[in-house]
Every structure is written in C-alpha cells, then in structure tokens.
Image (tube, rainbow, N blue to C red; front, side, top):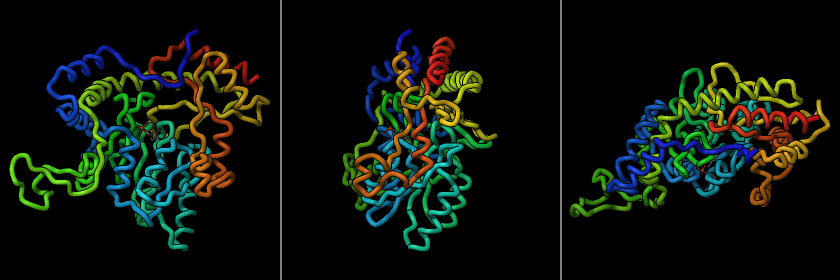
Amino acid sequence: MEFIPYSCQSIEDADVEAVVTALRSPFLTQGPEIPAFEAAFASLHQVEHCIAVANATAALHLACLALGLGPGDRGWTVPNSFVASANCIRYCGAEVDFVDIDPATRVMSVERLAEKLAAAKADGTLPKVVIPVDFAGLPADLPAIRALADEYGFYIVEDASHAVAASRDGVMVGSRWADITVFSFHAVKVVTTAEGGLCATRDPALAQRIRLLSSHGITRDPALMESQPEGGWYYEQVALGYNYRMTDLQAALGRSQLARLPAMHARRAELAARYDRLLAPLPVKLLQTAEGLVSALHLYVIEVDAAKTSATRATVFAALRDAGIGANVHYIPIHLQPDYRRLGFGEGQFPAAEAYYASAISLPLHPRLTDEQQDYVVEVLRQALG
Ligand SMILES: *Cc1c(COP(=O)(O)O)cnc(C)c1O
C-alpha cells in the first residue's frame, strides 16, 4: 500500500480552476478574491470582520499586537499546541506562561486557569492576553474562559487554527466569546490556501488595527491619516506594521475550498466515527466529545493505555511508520522545547500536557483517506498493541 499521510490537502478540479482564473486576472496580490474570501468566511463563521493574512502565525502576532500586548505584559497559552501559539506572545516582547490542559478534552483546563488567575491576582501578575487552543478541532471551553476574562480583565485570542467551521451549541467558533479568533489554512489543516491565516473579530476598531498592521501600518484612508492627503498618490504610515498580506491566488483557493468544506467535513466525520467504532475494543483512550460540540476533526488522536497493554507509544508509533503509515504526534509540550527551557521552563510544570504527550499518536485523518486504508491502519495498530 502507498504511504498514508496523517493529513493531506484535498484539491479538486474546482480548486485548480479557481486558482487559474485568479492567475489569468489582472490581480495576483490585492485583488477582488481577498474580500470575497473574507466575506465567505465571515458568513460561515457568523462574525462580522475577517482579515485574511499570510499564515496563522502572522494572524496570532497581529492579534496580540492589536490588543496592545507589549513589554511588561504577560500572555498565557497551553503547552499542548504548536509553538506559534506561544511564540506570538514573545514576538510582542511580552512574557509567556502556560495553563495546563484538561486530560479528558486536551484543551485548556478551566480549573487550572481559574487557579492560576487567582494566584496571579494576589501577586499582581495577571495576563493581558490568554490564548486557548481548539486542539484537534474541538472548541475549548470559551464560555467559561469568557466569564473569567470578564472577572479578571484579560483579552481572549482563540487559536482556532484547527477549528474551521467548528461550533458549540450551534454557535460558530469565533462568533461570540473571544476578542479575536485566529484560523490557519496551512496545507495540513481542514481548509487550505497553501499557506494562509485569518483574524476574525466582532470589534470594528480591532479589525481596522489588524488590517493596518498587516500591511506595513500604511493607510490610504484619509480618516486614519494625520495630515490632509496631498494627492491621489498619497498614503501614510501611521504605525509600525508588517507585510503579512494574503495573495489573491490563495484567496481564490480558499473560497473554492470553503464551498467544498461541507463535503470534506462529512467525510472526516464518517472516518472519525469509523475509527471510534473500530478502535473501541483496543487498549487505547479515545476522545469523548461532549454534547453540543461540533469538532472540525482536524486530528484523530489516540492515547496508548499503559494500564491495558505492554506496548508503548514508541513501539506503536514505530510499527505504524514501518508499515508506511504517516502517524504523527501532536504536540511535544511547548514548554519543553529547548528555546523555552532556556526561559526557565522544564519537566513537571504542566503534568497533564506531559502525560498526554507521552502516550499520544495522531492517526491518518483527511478527506482522501479510503475505508480500505483506514482498515489497514486499524489492523497494523491492533497487532502493534498486542
Ligand atoms: C498550524 C498551527 C498554527 C500556525 O499556523 P500557520 O498557518 O502554519 O502559521 C498555529 N497554531 C496551531 C494550533 C496550529 O496548529
């Protein structure tokens, strides 16, 4: 059997045609596809302001900047995420810290957050920004985190890089609780623009700030200028921004992908339900999704259950890879990366994220995975687990 990746983009003729049409248009960079993609995303997520940018790492950086995060401030995220969730805090010159995960859901633990906030209040070290992550596509407990944000006065940047079209009780991710929600359209994510990201917010002032900072801090809007325009050529740089813009080619791909998302998500849901059924008898821990939550199903993660098998994560992972299955591990806890250890972090600080990491394996899950390939993954896994 050919190599089976853990994740893989789904590109069909409609996607190719959309990109080719944009390529033949007068615009490659800042053309009509970008606002059209932003409008389609805003409509899907029921959130008024969407700013498409180069990637989600840039979107996280812009979100923190727009909220005024800077030197002397603190930002918290979870250890169980991609490093970008924490790096954005450091890009702004702020101090980073972490909140442990809930082992059942693998997202930020509301209890750990509440404890840490109470201690920080006593010390005068409250965070300015907290970044929960919708790990694997499952929405973090944003209603509870919003209640704490209102009590302690921090901003929420929801890292929904995994969670395009996820929802809680019918409320789309990004539409209600967070100040700014960030999405990724990297090729392994559920919707792709090759590289790409987006900031979503209900706040028009934040949206304006993000847009400004995403393009050098330059404006052509006289309302934002400090002087009268000197002519049609005139623009002003009114803040120090970046070139974090998306291109029209990427936006065209994104819009085509959004149109195909319901079908792609339906296939992910079918495969995830199939894994749930086929893996139930095996010595692994599966995610129990709470009622009312719709996951984007970016990742399908199992945990090798040490109480029920002598196989280890390392032996199971090696067996999968030897069989041509691109299993992966999400995530090495961020605080254990060398660049974070140098800041003083180390083992034992976030035990739930560390324990989860020690047993976790991400199995292949993407719309192009066939039932036959999935059966093969399950068979290899069954043998490896003994
Ligand atoms: C992929 C990812 C990012 C970064 O996304 P890019 O678009 O590759 O910059 C950030 N956070 C999480 C949780 C991710 O999975």
